[in-house]
Length: 355
Image (cartoon, rainbow, N blue to C red):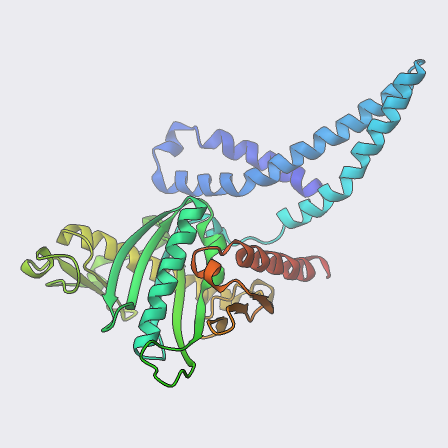
């Protein structure tokens, strides 16, 4: 618990700093300290709970010296109960002290793109979009559509959304990768099962202070929006395309009702992609222990299969199979998310404390 004691001291410093008028007047410094505050708070609360148990044991030991036999009996029982909690506190402290991705507490940009499979892939991308929208609602997060390119028979060739809330990236990061669907298309007269795929990318939202973005490096183009949305989308050049020349990243947004709104939204997506690009480059330079089994973020890796004929969902990273396809596509992702987080924690524990 020595590490937690030191963290509690640092938490006290941060808690004091965030009320300092000079810090409050510096948005970048204030945002940095608030992120640290949120990261340290669970550890400090755990440490204080442990301290209360230790103090309770000390009080019980003192009560054992009483001349009252009934009081002594109660003290012995109380000390035994409290001591039984210490191993659990130690295990939980290990988990709290595991290396953490600082982006875990952020909101996210969710990007879904149809892959192999033609029209079926577009329909599947739409299924995934609705699944995540319902999951976000279940979690109490705010889900906002940013941009969408519809498929020829429904669904989406590409769709981008933003999910706002506490700790969204820490949960949703496990969804990055290739999702595969196996089902009989409505147009398949022979009843043959087809396999299609869609790629999901989950990017932590970047603050302005996170990315040094020189607008001289960004080309801005406007064009008339297309697709669903009523007459308005075809009358004005409200859609915006941003091209970051050094990286070649291109972002389009046409869902907003004004060019200004689309520009701000596209800029947010561009920052998120640049931030993720920098994070990935940094991770590649760091120790392999930061590349855990379930959070590599490799978008080319097949992570999950949704099999309609058998009504099952299989997450290939941890070998988890659930015969609950309708529930999962209906937004019930909690059991999968929990299993993935536990697998990540188990691997981090092995890597961190086995040496």
